[in-house]
Image (cartoon, rainbow, N blue to C red; front, side, top):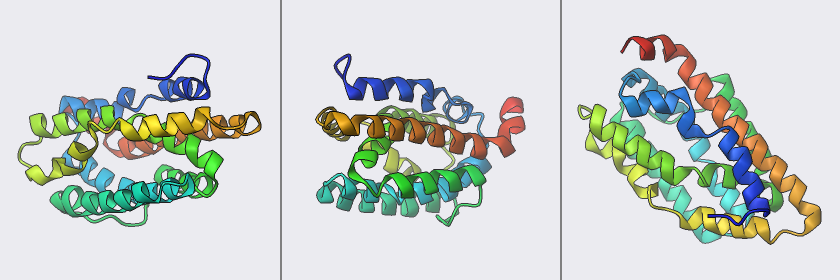
Length: 207
């Protein structure tokens, strides 16, 4: 939880305006109406962004967490993507390319990395729980290993709390940049899901 009238609380408002749990892609996943082909696209394309998370943690001065995130990106590739019969590659969906470019730009500077990482990490425990539950409930024909990455993150409240503390400790002159980075990343994350959802939207409606 963040305290009202802090930078983290202002960032929470940006995140809430583009809450990933409210996105039709994740809602269809949770409902079991998302085609397996869409999950496969997601595993292949979004993995390129997951592979960049370590860069953000390195920039905020947390090399140990960065090392863990490198391992988590490997878990994504070897359990989730592999379980769906695909492999993480350079993204082809334009909105995912834009998300990766946004991460590359914002993860190079500590101030913007704090805001951008918070936009992702603050949502990850809840989205991980939702996605793992969706896989277990509706996609039981897939290998159980597909749930591994999400199981690792569904109770990870430490990382968003650490980032929130870092945001709130920033000097006043840096706060606007961090908040703008959070807002920009929140939109980029939402748009990436939109890009992945678009080719499968009609199938989601008929399933």
